[in-house]
Amino acid sequence: MIAAVLAGGSGRRFGGDKLLFRIDGRPLALHTIERLKKADSITKVVIVASPENADKLKAFGHVVVDELLVGPIGGVYTALSLGDAFVVAGDMPLLVPEFVDFIVERFKTAKKPACVPRWGNGYLEPLHAAYSSEFREFLEEKIKAGHYAINRAIMESDACYIEIESLPEEWRESFFNVNTRKDLGRIRGTRERVL
Ligand SMILES: Nc1nc2c(ncn2[C@@H]2O[C@H](COP(=O)(O)OP(=O)(O)OP(=O)(O)O)[C@@H](O)[C@H]2O)c(=O)[nH]1
Ligand SMILES: [Mg+2]
Image: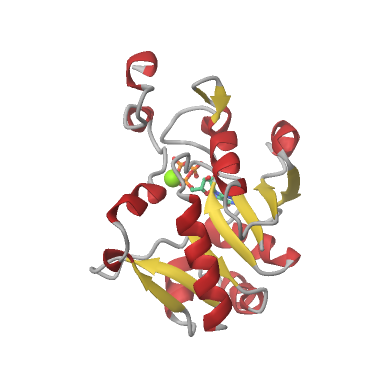
């Protein structure tokens, strides 16, 4: 299955280009991409970039341009033009490859428009989920109607959910994403250097 790395955000909270920010000598996006490549179920990684940052990200892999820039929903929509995809945010350097494989496996057996991890309180993890290319049309309708909340689109579809609390606790760090500079301190081994 293809993995799509969403990389079209503005990094407003981080201040500056967070996906190119170096952690242990390598850009944040590359940490995410390398983790994804370790998943057996992932055959190819593509980067869904904004027109503005596409050139800069080319060095890390095949880039597809998101012309919509309406938030993650537009990134998923763009990714699905390539077929079914496992979609993650580019700012997830602690992805757990076994967890990715687990979700892809569920997705393949469930035959649903999407397979999305869900917390006990109902909170979804849509940027760490598998989507069917057939879901694209549904997303298009939502985008055209100006409804940009991907969680809502998922909940209105016949998605399959993966209950996070029933899975190994170590897998939860897979959801960790860098939003602020302070978050960098949470990446083991980098605390002293970056703070
Ligand atoms: N392709 C695409 N990716 C997006 C879009 N919006 C956000 N992303 C990506 O989705 C991931 C999660 O988004 P955020 O954590 O909010 O990142 P961000 O938008 O860069 O940062 P903030 O401006 O601080 O919200 C990041 O990897 C972003 O690059 C979009 O409109 N298109
Ligand atoms: Mg984030």
